[in-house]
Image 1 (cartoon, rainbow over the protein chains, first blue to last red):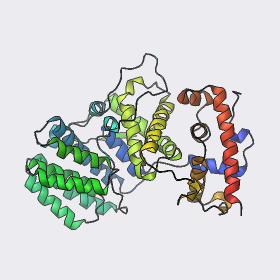
Image 2 (image 1 turned 135 degrees about the vertical axis):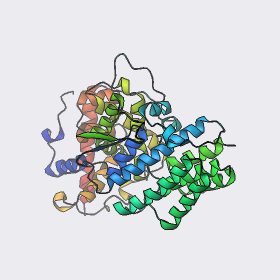
Image 3 (image 1 turned 90 degrees about the vertical axis):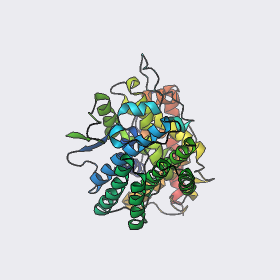
Image 4 (image 1 turned 90 degrees about the horizontal axis):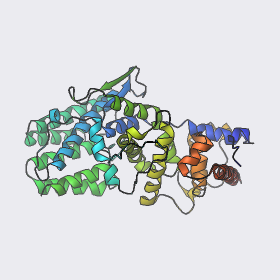
Length: 232
Length: 182
């Protein structure tokens, strides 16, 4: 029987239709949207009117942009095969091509099909370059996020200037000021990078292991673990 | 108006590929998140799964036919959801026991004004659908793909889509009735 029509035309009750309507109204959260944009590594999309609809979103987006550059640094570190150099932001372009290096793109099909054939059994091959933060603390206000970002940016900038001690100092400041910060996972990634850049692999590994034990499902967990394992 | 805030001022020029990826996210993320959630991807890994869908799509951008982005992305979401279900032991013996679901004998919310409860109810009911039926129901009735698109995504004949959707409706109806029984 191929003349399938929508349930609304085939005897659904009002109650059933209402449930379907509710299901269709579900929307991705602004944070999910920003995280996905950041993960694909092409920039941070928004509309002039702020379609995502969150007052603090711009601040969060800037944070994700900062973290995207952290992700690029991570990628370069991995590519460096044992050279624990942290890529400064200015040398870490985050463009679509970098995402393509994460997911091996097959040659375009001559007859594009709507049936993707990519395996997803190997998450490491399809791992987003920048993930949403692992923990989900209570929503932070825009001003709070802005302050958190300011401190993390100081750490990031110090790292980019090849000043890991300065970065760690800024991160300690972050930790002291925002013990329940919304960007704690991001702070951890930068900390691991800074410790590695300083040559302190043991501490970097300890921080990474502690984080991955607390957030085993986080993509950041895999990332920091790989960071420390790649730098022997 | 659409704009891109560059990650690094000099790093991003907003290529057409970038714009297309951003367009995919802008236009289809809601559907991807809905589908992942309805196919049993738990909240704890939903964000990662959504990112994975779009990262995979970004790597296959040239193969995505213009105008067919949504079914393509939902096809990836099917596979990502399947993987997530295998790796995360989310589903309980009885999904209706899930804390997000309504208690077994709870009444339906009046006029379904409580959307949260409605979401939970439908999630629980859809979760009880057998594999195959669930995918067909979600893609056809919630995401409103055409029967032929669903057939292509699931790689089954269109007649099988029809029978699965209709059987899924019966399951959903019975499960709803069971959920409201005193």
